[in-house]
Length: 176
Ligand SMILES: [Zn+2]
Image (cartoon, rainbow, N blue to C red; front, side, top):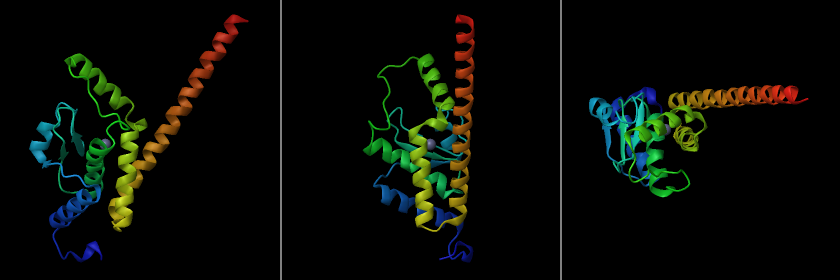
């Protein structure tokens, strides 16, 4: 099975895999695309590639287009987390949240995105799915994302350690 043979169009190929991922994960969220997806994802921040919308119980996957199976797999994995591992992945929102609180928590999520276990799990699943189905191109894409986020996590951690040890050093110097 080679993708290059193009027995089916790319769209059909994508849709077949989307169905297959949903079947694997035993989830069936509605999936929306394009402008509709963009509008729906607005309050989650801008739609880069895809998003899983859950905060108002939408349980909807929003995708920019039908180009990337790895992104679809990543977002559907969030639907799986939400359905089956709600507590472990901390899918809960205070019953009533002010607009400000919602804004702050969105910013915190963005700032700590690379360290978030939801995202790491979703990327790992996407890579695993692409590997199992020999989707070489998509696997490359998700592996690159995983690699970059790993490197970033390491550099952020090293940066923090350096900063904290400098602070500890300065405090120590000023005490003695
Ligand atoms: Zn994600």
